[in-house]
Every structure is written in C-alpha cells, then in structure tokens.
Image 1 (cartoon, rainbow, N blue to C red):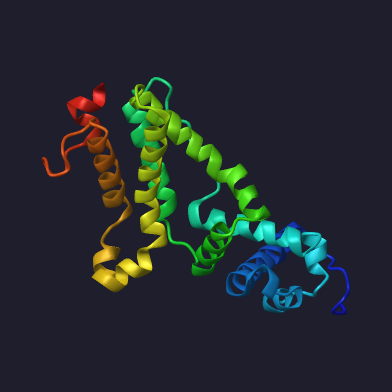
Image 2: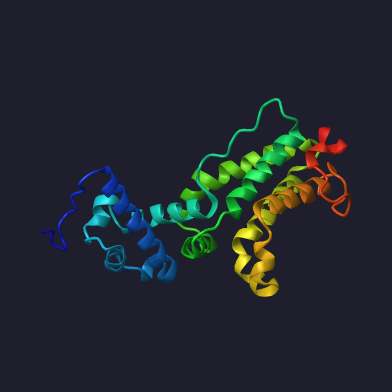
Length: 233
C-alpha cells in the first residue's frame, strides 16, 4: 500500500502521463481560483487524487508546477504546436491569409474555462510563467505575423506595422476571450452560429480590406479573398 507521503512509483508510461495530466488539470483549477499564493500543493494533489509527493516527482516544486500549468493552460486555449510554414512560392497576401486563418483556428477551438482564467490572470500581472509562455509560444507567432504584414505592406513604418498586427490578433482573440459576454448580449444560438469557417472568412476579408488588398467589406457577399484581383499583387 502506498502511504500519503510516499514517492509515487509509476507502473508505466501511460500511467505516468495520465497522473501528470491529472495534476496539471487540478493545478489549473486551483491556480485559476486562488492564484499562486492562495493555492496549496495539498489542495492540488487532493483534487488530482494523487499523493502529495507526486508534485515533487513530476515537477520538482510548486514554482515549476505553476509554470508548467500556465503552459498547459495556454496550449489548451490557443494550441501549442508550431505555426505551419506557408508555401514559399505563395504570394505574400496568400501567405498572410493562411497565417490569419491558422491564428483564428487556434483561438476559435473550445477551451476550458479554468485555462482561460489562469492565462488571463497570469498575463494581467506577468511573472515567470508569462515570460516562458511569451518566449515559447507568443513571440514566435507575433514576429511571424509582423513579417507577413511587412511583406504585404513593405512601405509601412514600424509603428503602424505593430498596430496593424495588434488589430489582426485582436479580432481573433475577441472570439476566444469574450465569447461568454457575447452570448449574454446576443444569445448562445446567435454566437454559436459563428462557426470557424465564417469567422475565418470574416477576419481575413476584414483585414485584407483594411490593408487595401480586397474590396470593401460591404461588397459582394462571399467573395473569395484570394480570388480578388487585389490579392494577387
């Protein structure tokens, strides 16, 4: 029999991975609700159904557990795999469109409420975990978006280039962060009807119209963005 303070002895890789994920899910909920200082290792392990030594076995200490939990929450909220590289022979506008669609896809997928709460809590008052998430996930995507925008608008100054990138990200992020409020305002059915394809098409068309690479948003409904004459430039 394993005592409450005994070091866990994983019976195999699947069991080890499953116990580690249970700890991360439990830690996500605890940290989201209580913050780093208010959450306790004992509360986390109790919620996860593992003994208290499991934190040391899998993560080393509470600090490292917190960093890994924020990373875990971020990958749930926005997907953590590297951003796909568009075909090198594609036109700059087509590369930008593909990149925007990928950003929207990652931010449109359903996320646990606790993952959103924890990520937003950490980003509101950035600590070590926020720096790790920025370095590993956010900065590479932000820099890649800036280069796609630079290729489409080579004459744009750096200040406007930065703000344009913020505008693109802001559109996609809205559907991730503000969905519960949008449902309160307009109703769950109306917001639920905004599926991935509809949102992707809208964000791409709205962005390209603002950049002067597609017709006005009030133009022909359903026009293919990459088929517009301007997008071939």
